[in-house]
View 1: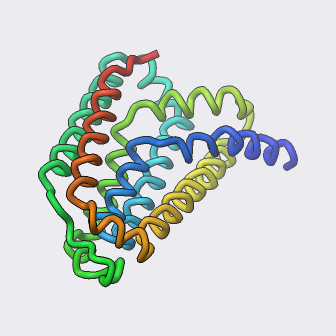
View 2: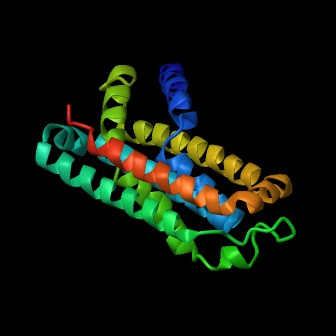
Length: 213
């Protein structure tokens, strides 16, 4: 048991840096918080966490190795991710100003305009269509987790990592939807949408330069 605990702590020491690093997932949660409110941002956060379990699961099953060795599969996933991020970026650029006045509740009418399914899907797809986690989990699991560690234990590691990821983004969602933050964003919503659009397109172009191996 102490061996498994040491593996988990080692994984989390590495993963904690990945959680807080700026990326498309963080940009997505921030935009959801600003544009659609706390509830949508939290549901999107859950989608990102579930997507992480998707990556962990196929890594454990060995499919991650197959993807990392197949240029065709890697490129299919990569270009789908590029197209998705660029699409979200264009949508953000076209959004204009958002009605997020400081007097409105974080879970007000603007949140109800986006369904939970769509909010979940935004988070899930943004993470699932990024091939970089394939190499992250392959390298981390190979370096830290012993090959004799049972699959159900590895899956448990993934659950802990996904839970921490969700908790981090839920915290971001709460912070970004406090009255003070919403009041600030209300004054700059048009430019924030434009900036987030540029960020998403930028991440899409960065992903386009990624190579397998």
